[in-house]
Length: 202
Ligand code: FES
Image (cartoon, rainbow, N blue to C red; front, top):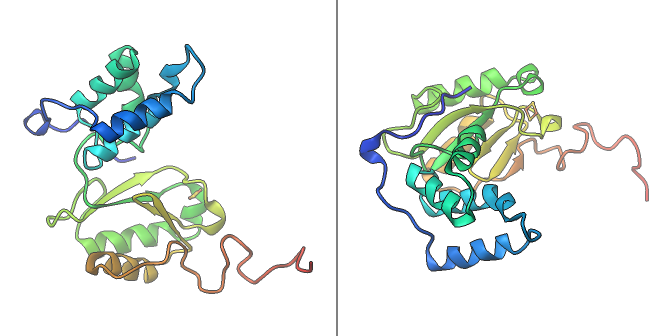
């Protein structure tokens, strides 16, 4: 598992508050919860703060969200430091999350991660010097049927191998549009690789 640490103090900002639009969005999110259960909006509000702050949560942003929801600061810190969807330090423009759990591993996940590291010249937990890519390992991404899988920012890329993953990264680097989801041209979504075997007639 990638080591999770707060960014060093010299790059921690000294203040954070939601932008006008995000404050409205935060109020909208909170209103979806029953009275007295507003604290349950902690995850979506931390996510909102992270998106506003370039993809990572500073300590002051976590404190701000805790105070916004009137929950103890330690609760917000626990949640932010537990879930890998929250980044505690700056990340590259493209955050690549490798699934390292058994189904992906059995289907060649190690080859995919090795090819990425080799192509980018960085190891897990590191960011390329141009600030474009960060590599991270996570547990099951919940798309095992199309293993091996990686998540890049909000999208999943599936049915990867050491060749198509490098093509994918190369396209991202050069700004070429990439196809989200399965990279197997013969597979539709998560249908069987060899085509439908049942319920194949209307
Ligand atoms: S094991 Fe990789 S997505 Fe589930």
